[in-house]
Length: 255
Image (cartoon, rainbow, N blue to C red; front, side, top):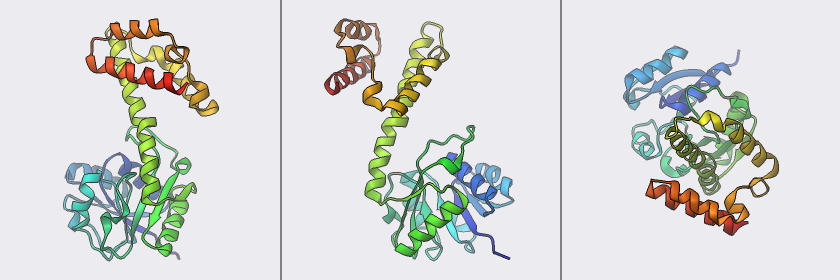
């Protein structure tokens, strides 16, 4: 009988939640879950009958892989406390692979997706960018990903991954912030973002089908200076005025 693959999950946030659930559903044994907040570690580990710890030095060393899913600026601090003989990866898009310098086997398992605990995801459809410190470990990580997470696995070094992550911030985080600004503007008139749902959906679908350049419409694309100035005058927030003009100028320049 084949021995189960055993992993520790270092972190208990959005990424940790989705990856651990997918791995567990695929037959991987989740051995330990670490979080500085023991309540969070216990809440996640309970789902897998795993050990919850709030000191990363207490995670089990008899595993095949440590998966680090914490914020980028905490990876190095946590790495210093991990057993360097246990293979380790992080899930960051921007942190380089060498944050694990000194480990025998180390790498990156980066899921190119936005994660929230309250949203179910089809993990099998997500692209994973893989990097290992050796050809052999890279191959092992790709097989691990294809076996338990997604067959959409791709080798990508730290430079390529950071470029993709940068573009993803524009596509995801900045877009989400702009929608938040839209929502706050609507709230001033006792409206909410639901009035824009059909527009948002059509915009995203059109961008994916036609590409952003072909999908662009609006006053800046048309060169409608009067409407642009009217909109800027209506804004009370000085930063939003600057943002509106910067984005409008960018659209005008591109089109």
